[in-house]
Structures are given as structure tokens and as C-alpha cells.
Image (cartoon, rainbow, N blue to C red; front, side):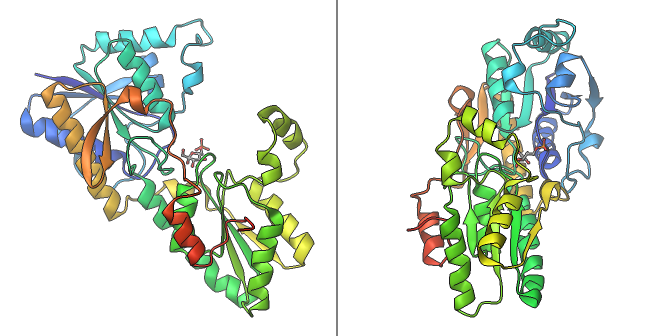
Length: 359
Ligand code: F6P
């Protein structure tokens, strides 16, 4: 009889439950006596022994349910080695809970920070299997993360809805898409939604080039322009600053987010009427799309198979349409970013999309 615990950590997304269902089904099908424990609210539950026993019924009907039935929380990796407010050693506490529960394996669903802590627990001697969750699609070692395609659909729908009203009023619209460090979501939603300008953290923008792209469209008789702007879009001037200099510069920044700054600059230079839409956390909400249901079920099944084989210390990844185990030590601490020289950027430029650069 196996005892396995599941844990969901970091920002949630649409297919967490679908993925856990995939792991659970695979384990129960191989051995109906498998015991599954749900650790509540991410690593916090593992630190403070907050968990509950799950049964096959728990996983019934959750394929289509967004969010996470276990709850989640953000426990930054950089604080893991720092004691909590009561002086408790967090890593030791997590190891102790694992031992107390007599687990054979801990299945950890999460993004970059989560995978780093999963690797830390592996180094501490725990049997762990990671699963790549995030709407950002920025986890190294996997072509795709679950949650990404659902979020692309939602952000695309936001841009689609803006199209009709932008046309009616001859306005310039900015749709701010999630992604502080990487722009995969903005890039895909921007292309899918027919955005005219896409601004990504990986390609610092030149406001003159952004304005030129908008004015060119206006001269061509286009009634509106739509910009898809990542939360982490950055101007080339700001990108040239050190972290410290940027922090000092942003101290008195009057704008709630980068889109408002860009919007104000465009309005000032062109006189165009600007509107800003921030779909925010709706991008992480609702039911997983069909693509995510398939990929999360496959990833979950593959994680279950690894556990049945006693192969631990891997994150289950997706490459070239195959599910593959990727050593956690390779995944930990790396980000998968948009390469400004990649073919998707070239193709988007061929379509006439501006990335806010002069080329
Ligand atoms: O990592 C997922 C993500 O949704 C990012 O795209 C976004 O920048 C961030 O989380 C928002 O975090 P929070 O939910 O903690 O505000």
C-alpha cells in the first residue's frame, strides 16, 4: 500500500484539479488501496501539518473545476531557509510532516518557485514528483504548462471584446495581460486577438516606436489600435537601469501599472483617446479549456506512472508532444523566456505587429 500526498502551491490556475485527478486515477487504478492525503494551502500546510485524507470520490467531477480543491498560498523560495515568526525551521518542519505521515511520495503542483522548493525537499531526501503549473508558461524543461492555454483563451476573448468597442469609438485600447517576468501569455493572446502592438518584458519598448505604429495605422485610415501589454513590459530606458536605480525611479510613480504609464505617454504625444482594460485574475479563473484538460490528464497520468515505478526527483514535462520526466535539479532556478530572435517573433512582425522597436 502506497501513501502519497498532493500539494498545490503558488498562484492557482485552471487545470490543477484536472491534473490531481489524473495522478489519483492512475494510482487508484493500479492499487485501489492507495492512500492519498491532501496538504492544504501549499507548503504552508506541510509546514504546519494542515492536511486531510482524500478518497476516490474526492476526485470525481473535478476535471472541469478551476482553482484547487486543496487551496494554495505563496511561500517564496527565498524565505524557505528563514525561520518563521516563532523561530520554526520551515524546511525541517516540512520534512517532519512528510515523515510523520509516512509518505512514499509528495506530488507538488506549481510554478517556478514551487519547483525550486520541490528540488530543495528532494535534496533533503524526500521523494518528490513535480507537475508544471502556471498560466505564464515559463517553466524550464517543458514546452507547455497546464493553465497556459486556458489563460490564452481568456485574454484573447478580452482582446476580441475590445475590438468591437474600439472600432465604434475610434480609440486606442491597451489590454494588460498577466506576466511580470515573461511574455508568453501576452504574445499568444496578442497574436490570437489580432493586437497591433505587443509589448513584452523580454523586448524593452521604445515609446517613439509604439507611437509610430499607432500613427501609421491612423494614416492608413484604421479607426483604432489595440495594444497587448504584459504586466512586466518595460521601456528601453528603464531596462538599462540597475534594479536599485529602477526601484528608486518607481518610488514616486503615479501609475497603478505599466499600461497606465504607456497610455498617458501615447495620449500626450498623439492626442488619441486611450482606454485601458486589465482582465487581471479572470485569466486564472474558470474552467480549464479542452487543451488543458488533455495535457493535465496526460501529465497527471505520467506522474502516477513515475510513482508506480518508484522514480522520484523529476518534474513531468511536455516536449515535442511527448510527456517526459525532467530532473528537478535541471528545472530549479531557470526561467523559460520568449527569445526576441525566435521565429514566432519574426512571424508576428511579418504580420505587421509592432513590438515597440524601430526594426
Ligand atoms: O504566476 C502567475 C501569475 O498569475 C502571474 O502572471 C501574475 O503576475 C501573478 O501570478 C499574480 O500574482 P498574485 O495572484 O499573487 O497577485
